[in-house]
Image 1 (cartoon, chains in turn orange, brown):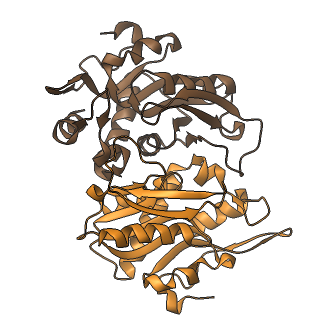
Image 2 (spheres, each protein chain N blue to C red; image 1 turned 30 degrees about the vertical axis):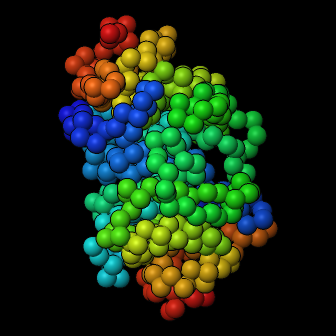
Image 3 (cartoon, rainbow over the protein chains, first blue to last red; image 1 turned 180 degrees about the horizontal axis):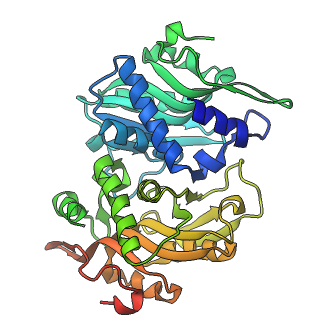
Amino acid sequence: MNALVERIRREGRNLGRGILKVDGFINHQLDPVLTQAMGAEFARRFAALGVTGITKVITAEVSGIAPALATGMALNAPVVYARKTRPITMHTGVYHAQAPSHTKGGIVDLIVSPEYLLPSDRVLLIDDFLASGQTIAALASLIQQSGATLCGIGCLIEKRFEGGRQTLAHLQAPIVSLAIIEQMDETGIVVCAPADEGQTPDNNQV
Amino acid sequence: MNALVERIRREGRNLGRGILKVDGFINHQLDPVLTQAMGAEFARRFAALGVTGITKVITAEVSGIAPALATGMALNAPVVYARKTRPITMHTGVYHAQAPSHTKGGIVDLIVSPEYLLPSDRVLLIDDFLASGQTIAALASLIQQSGATLCGIGCLIEKRFEGGRQTLAHLQAPIVSLAIIEQMDETGIVVCAPADEGQTPDNNQV
């Protein structure tokens, strides 16, 4: 998606150790026009892949909420954001998974109430980054616990050199990323729009 | 806002001790149509109050993000969500305030990077709940630290019996809520659309 790629080229900062700072439009400040366009783009690309009948979009708090909501708006589907701590409004008896935190260190819990993820749901999983794939794998585990069907995985930015796409290949779900970071080093950030987007993982490995 | 009031009547649950569960459409699952409509409603009401030229919408993670984003979409203004922990992508030298957590207990930090809140900004502050007003007061403190101008405060649900509106009166900013909980007890939840919305705090006390 060219608008996102251009924005990363202009404003993205390589903080070292594989950390890409995109706080100006994804992780702290949101550009509403770009966010809405990214949601529409996910809807368009998954439709082009034949992924239809989505009844729910799932993501993880915090930074997944904006792109997931924009996607839910485009698909007219409810959005569920997995909580990292169980608020007192949530029953016990929840779906629960864990993943390592990329930017904060430690292990993060991901919790979804069974009230909002049903065996009949056809789910699109949306997140801001696909890096090692472990957060998305944890969200996929929540979907599996519920008996719902994972229909597709969408991420705004894929750090391809971290191999998350391979980690997630066993899920047999199409993976769509809107921008791919091929490389980050002292010479800069190499980012491109995916040429082969919309293929299933088996056909879409580097 | 009738759509929100009806939804609270239908799905809201009184968990006791002043806790209102609205996880099905605000705090865990989001209704994209309702969320978008609530953002448009904030834009309409603040415009009717003469609040114009908004350059930024500010909120706190997690549950403020969706209504703030919808408002930012309606106003075409960037949205900044205060972080509760400082991610490694954020510089030191941040704006910082603290507030007690209503649903989790303890004290919550709220952090905004000076990169995204400028003295020239005209800011709308959006959150899901107005209860005691302490989270919103902390967000207002971040705006004051930056030198930006607080132009208005919008919340989806005001628990009027907690007195937050009075706590925030000194900010001299118009407060718009889309639904007001007048009372919550064992007999049920008394919720209404504000009849006097859009007045300044001085003219709008119960």
